[in-house]
Length: 484
Image 1 (cartoon, rainbow, N blue to C red):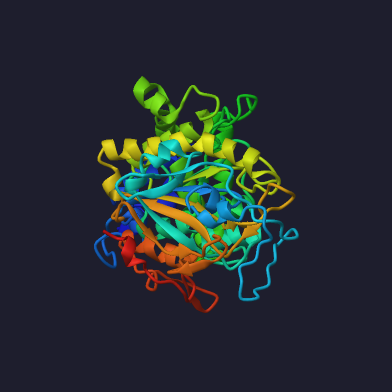
Image 2: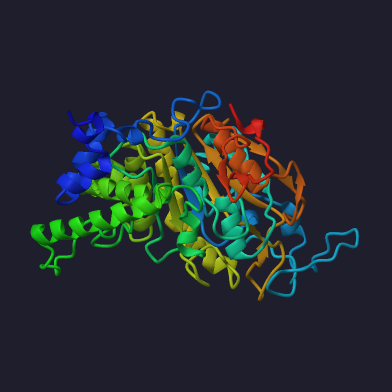
């Protein structure tokens, strides 16, 4: 009698013996999920390493992170400082003989915000006139008013805010969440990235990397403005030579190569990740078109997000897609505003009055729409929305009317998913130059996000190069004042 395991092939054998294309890959995964493929069918039995065994009860199930690429100016948006208006045009002198430097320029005169501020909501939070829609949602936000960065350089600052480290090669927040929790569905990626249609941010794909975590946890990039939003999901129409017969021949060759690789590298997780990507691609051929087709959305919803308006169309579409993705079980969605480069982002060195308003106009209505839409659908209670940037700007001028980088203080916020609404944590000095009270680091921010997801940041680790690595390195404290 043949042994049991030879009668029922492993998932890999089933995949390549009977696959004959991506449809077979999907079939293999679906049967594997039901434990029908024998020896290694349990690979997909738990979506994430901690699924079903979280460190504590979660308040949030999923995350939408809105990243303002370039360093959004805190004193021109949320951090109202009367001293900047009173002393505009004076030499910047914080007192106590402190030496003042700027990373890319000579410090100029005190520069007041060229925009009006007003208080909003029951919380009475000050918000710039550049954000009239978001101002109406201020009572849903928990603002971190004195965040700090260890750097004022874009590349390291972006890595730090995404991965917890200044250097490349480490997993980002989305990858850690994907690794820990997996997905709530099996036909869409766990971690999706919606970059600005003008291009990728500084650090390119390094911002979405799984680093040393299994490659299946890296961000799946969706180019929403492209005729083919998901790269390589289907062969190009010009590739007439890709026939079912050629597909089978290619898969047969790949099967032979994979078997040789497995024989020599039994513990290499990259092959498993590649197989998972094939399986997911097959299922996405069926599920992705429905997700990205917005025809089913009401006209009222489309208007809410600013679709059909040139200014808000791009970011609004991506915010609406973020809602549709989390609604269908995607665990982590990252939406980027601003590409890398000297212009068309939040890196306003030349002229705050001219450069900042277009960025706010493109994002203000869609972000407010996302919050309102999630709330109306009952999703905000367990969806954590994050608004982040890599650092802030200086209170003095650069080149007359711009602002230089400032790691001393900046603003971020959270909403939904167990966050206490209408509160503010921390305070900068009178200039919005440095954090003065209750500063928050990226480590504290990440620790708090993980806590809301039911994860202890000190216990979520991965063994790599002899060390138990974690998102927060050896730092970080949960900011309990932000948690309801």
